[in-house]
Length: 418
Image (tube, rainbow, N blue to C red):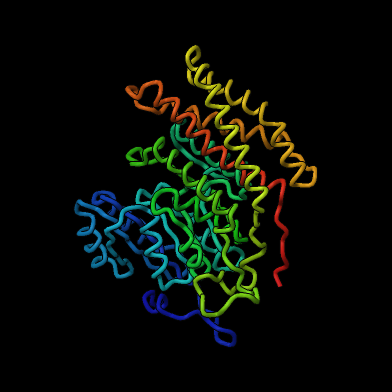
């Protein structure tokens, strides 16, 4: 089967022979003139030898200032199934949005240029989409069966971040940031317009919005080896991710993250960008709406908790190390805020309580993230800068608790698929 012609075919319709799903694998690059040739040659050889679906590779140079674009153009001449495009905007998210929107393939995927993820997991990931089982598929380094080699620091940051997603948002996936993902093109395009981040948080935001709108996310355990030359700044990226999580939590709480369901009678056919895909099983649950009273109540609690944490952390820090002061402030704030949270839940949620087993991991995640944010500051920052960082991080984490309580205490009602 000729790959180029396969990529340009329209999807089969009822009554016509079924064709194989086509796959477009995107490699976003920024100043990677040295790593790019080896990546493309390795990936091209692997796909040609063992990948059973029609495929192509798309290189997206997003803002490189070295010879990356020249190298990419050379690779397109060397390999007929390799394509390249250039963007002036930097950011992995921006690169994937542009490539996935314009791709002619049935399935779009991406992987990092360092090929840290073993390529044998590619077809199992894509197969879940080609079969119709799921709408989004991801590689995971944290599920049973995965094998990873990375530094202890990166391991702790990754597990803490994903624990925050699990206990803060109640997500079903285990690894948001693994650079190995795929999605059905018709399903993912409506979501891309709702994803605001153009950087590293793109992955997390896309997955959160996908689950929020009822899409199925399939996980494949992967073998993964850390690239020691990685340019990811862990602490700075973690802080940016926390800001992104707070923004997404607010968007979900106010209903802005919800796509309109395609079979709702109030939709007009003249607004296709607002529709979820027409695949009948794509949306299995309605996004939750939040009443103004509930939103206001939790907002007051968030302000109260943040102020209390600041008043406790500042004097404790004068006598104790940062880690100890943070632990004590979190414990005292949590104890003082328990009654107010219980009152809000009982009044607005029908006398339901949050199980303690779910609050413990959230507390540990809060402690780990705030402590790492403080310890990761540059030495000349000063005590005031340190305290501001600790309180600011706590404030962002507090905003995420609203999403957690909204999911566990006020669960959404599933709707039928038909």
